[in-house]
Image 1: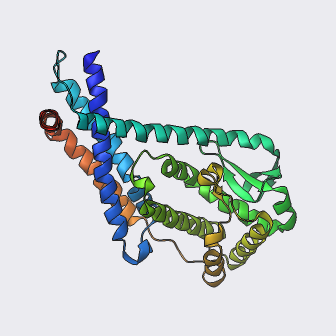
Image 2: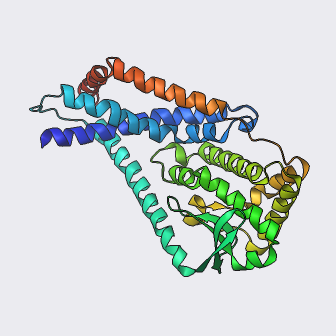
Image 3: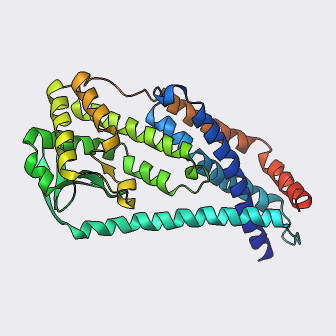
Length: 314
């Protein structure tokens, strides 16, 4: 039992320490983005945003826990100082905050019950008309639905409705709601900074641009219909209220991006979003780092580092 308790405390402390280090790295990287990150693909921005939480979780789960199991004696009677307990408390706070946010996200599914939802077919696939729903959105995180408010459906032409549904379908194919949820619930310190909010905003802009381009499919007429649908939905739906629901559901229109999206659709409907070459490079780098840890002596190294920290820190 004592070994289990010490493992939990040390794991939480490592989680917090890695989180702080990776948060600083993401913060510096976000400040150095050239041209406000305009040339970066959405997945690169997502990688930078989720780096602190991902790095901390992987360090604890993939490196620290196996090292502690392999090298820590079962009868160990180590005692910890205040600094290690402070780091462990920070780790607990980050995980609790993430858990609370995940619970809030789970509660958004219940909001579907407040609308009378009727399925209908469009050329872009199945969608649901929701009486009283303000706008168009891909609702849910894992089991998603394309919702179209009754007021919105009444003002859209069939062509506009089809391309609006196609836009939300592209969000579904890209798992954008899951990505939004990951950013919203990420257990990290970086998420508290303005730089993280900026990265999230840039990611949303790239995700919307990508969905617009794929929904228009290079067709000028479809692009015009999509631009028209954006303006009509913005007038009918009004401004989003900033709820948890809107933090994790992909909205069809976002006021801050509306003008840019409409201009791009009208002027250059065939424009492509930034290529994902850098995102593939980032994934390859992460895979290489993980492989290096497995084949190197990283387990014993982190065990030695843990022992040193226990003896040195007050």
